[in-house]
Length: 140
Image (tube, rainbow, N blue to C red; front, side):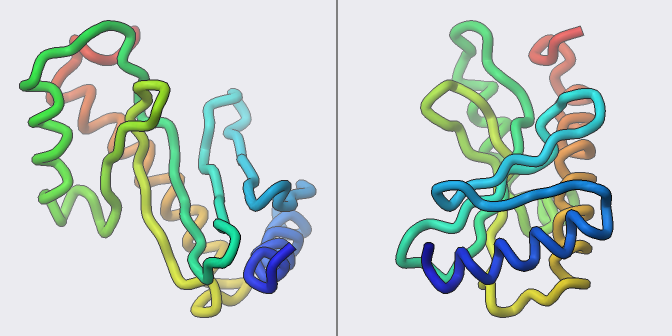
């Protein structure tokens, strides 16, 4: 485990103690879930990196979508007020993910907790925004 991964593991432990859970990085990754099972946030600390990457499942594309859908998702990346420093990316499973990153050393226990809670809320807001803009894309 790298120094940065150890540091984030310590922050996760503290977060877990405050929120009634036990969290740790496994191979540089830790996934947190909402009570209903929805993915809240995935934390990743790549090897040889000093960056903490956060991402969350916004929606899965079930079928081939047109170019207008991809254009909308990319245009949302420029909506600074809506995205609040985050961006949308498509993973290898055609899952649209909300992403952000922070220098790990800039975080302490309090700012780490604020980051996790804020990012989780941002993911919910992003899901709502996409549903408002394109209800045909979201599952009922």
